[in-house]
Figure 1 (tube, one colour):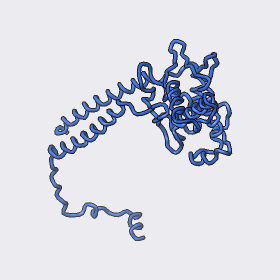
Figure 2 (figure 1 turned 45 degrees about the vertical axis):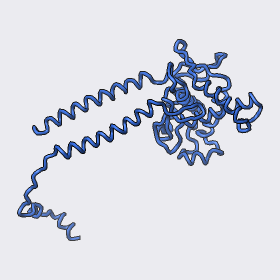
Figure 3 (figure 1 turned 180 degrees about the horizontal axis):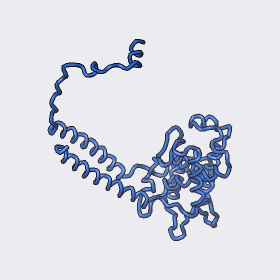
Figure 4 (figure 1 turned 180 degrees about the vertical axis):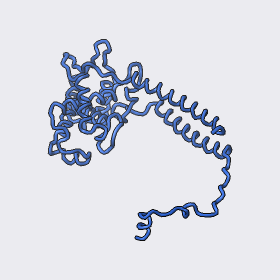
Length: 284
């Protein structure tokens, strides 16, 4: 044991350093977590949803399997989609459709490339701009975005409520036919999914990245990997390879060969007397 004393101290030092780093960044995750506002409201003060409803929606999602049924913010099973990414894309495309009809009286697909780019610019400005008021603990939502939210929520209500036209999708997602029977809990579920998508699209204060560091990838609002994301991904891979290489190097240069054991003159196993059950088994 004494010959490994230095190694044990080295292991202890490594554990202290690594778990200290883990604890620090674990604390940071909670400190800079996306806000859970008291209310999402429209310009006229009408409340869309709020903290308690969103938390009830999270509970509703957990009641039907939670992370075993799709994922949120990339965490969970992947048989069903990531609900954050799915909701966000559906809401964005619906916003573009509503804007196209309001601005040009045509479907978005019928617009010219220039017209589409104008609407995409407006889309990005609306979704990435942070309208959270810390003083009032509210988030302002436009009427157009509210309409897009309601349209997206209707899809999820039908999906989790057993609508026949979405039966094939549920089969692909490994969902039971009526995944969430209660109408009110389905509504709360949609509000939870909306909040996760809001955090994924809204930039942090004094930052050009969203609360989820521009995740998921969504070109419509320029949700692309940040420089930090790329740099630290590369650094982590390099450190992993360097660490494995260092272990191999240490093993090659510092290992001590164990002495080869001397084989016994007689087979130790042959000296045991077989029990009656062992003898019976050998006779089968």
